[in-house]
Image (cartoon, rainbow over all chains, first blue to last red; front, side, top):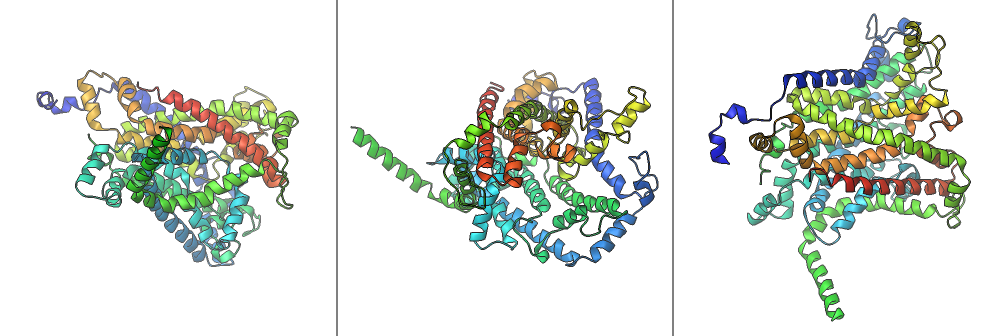
Amino acid sequence: MKIFKKSQPVAQVKKAKRSVGGNIVLGVFLASLGFLFFFPVLYMVSQSLKPMNEMFIFPPRILVQNPTLNNFRDLSNVLANTLVPLTRYIFNSVIVVVIGSVGHIIFASMCAFPLAKYRFPGVKVFNKIIEYSLMFDATVTMIPNFITISRLGMLDSLSAIIIPSFATTLCLYLMINFMQQIPDSLLEAAQIDGAGYFRTHWKIVMPISKSALVTAFIMIFQRLWTNTGDKFIYEERLKGFSYLVTQLSNGSVTGVGASYGGILAAAQIIMFLVPVTVFLFMQSNVISTMATSGMKD
Amino acid sequence: MDEVIKRTKWQWFVHEVKRYKVLYFMMAPFMILFLVFVVWPVVQAIGYSFTDYNVLESANFVGLRNYRELFLQDKIFIKALKNTIIIACFVGPGGYILSFLLAWLINELPHTLGTIVTVIFYSPSMAGTAVTVFAMIFSNDSTGYLNAILINLGLTTDAILWLSDEGTILLIVILASLWLSLGVGFLSFVAGIKNVDEAQYEAAALDGIRNRWQELWYITLPNMKPQLLFGAVMSITGALSVGSIGDSLVGFPSPNYASHTIVNHLNDYGMLRLEMGYACAIAVILFALMMILNILVQKFLRKIGT
């Protein structure tokens, strides 16, 4: 193999050829479909920049004519007069999202590694249970869950959202699937070098499954960020930012007035921008080739 | 003789448990929470499906009555079952193939551009209220965008009642669901494709793989089996639990139950009527449906690239 490679000029061996025609067709396909998918976001942005007189124009226009930041200013005025200071809502959200996501990634990755790579008694049963637990509708498990949470005394506290979120199976299942691709030889080598399971997990499995961990992080982050928690938390000063936004859309903060649509759109833009920022930040930290380094058998 | 084998089997089991005891410790924190917050509620819900539990009164055991009623008397449930299967037939495979195709195309792009394009396609799933745009487009009166376009082009003189006509409701729910189907499975595909070893592509190019289609079939797909399985589970659960999209487009219940799905039916009994026993039975049926489908799809996926 090596000899063969040497005899070839490096630039030519890279990958199978991409035809120019194919590139153009696929590029056009991607761009037009991308517009279709991005349309609602575009609409949302445009809506948040519309001055009041454009909100009720007939026939309705999709794009804003005279963009203004008034809606964002109104939003901050409205939020300045909430029952509990805005910073408190944001603080609650940050606590829930940070502790929830980080804790989940640590617990779930520690659970996923053994399930993906070792054949100990019970592993098949555990894997099946986890896979099928994804398929049970959450509506009917809500009442049993409510009873458990109240028995544990977690009702009306942030832990009612944080602690159950540690046990989200979706990300665990994702990690198990990705970690199955780690070559056994790498783990054996670590074992021979004297690393225990915990050390192997921390030093080899975690760095190598970075792309899976990042994807899982985005998933759990988004879940926690949009979780209003209104089923388990009643006290206003323990509620998060997403709850405030749902209240805005109910009209219970502003009242259903004329400027309400624009304010709502502005709030939704903020709700949307946070996960997008996290997404871009996390993704830019994963260089595509990083994931496979050291994974060659 | 049997006695000996049994003992050795048991001894082997104990031996293996001891050997891997560190792994059990590693898994314990997650597993305990998982049992408390996921498995236990599911077990309880399955138990409730054999009772007449209604949240307010204590539950009485009624055997299979809920299931019998669902299949033999509840015509709306049968309609919901039919609708769910129709929606799933389009949204499941459609969303799955679309997710993979897009992830694969994104992988051809340079890293930064690829990330931005990923965000664009994932954005409907991140923008909480994205479905409202569909309501604007298909709005019934002449202010709906699609109707306005059709009237301006002279294709129709009267506004089409997209969201009231039984024939079109289901179609629009399918379209909106497809458009929201680029979710978690899509993200796992994007991450999984990047994990495929570059050296394999190089080796394949030497071995005579000529274009990207061959590369896709012989290298990319077989290397992505774990992600393909994950995506399949996501597609199955996603496609069979379409429900809230219909709610926000046409309201609940949909006109003449035109887009009524199993999940809609479940929410109706679980959240509105509080007939928990009945709702749990619906959940169990949905669960069984997903399990069966999952087994079939996994059998099929194992054949890829072999």
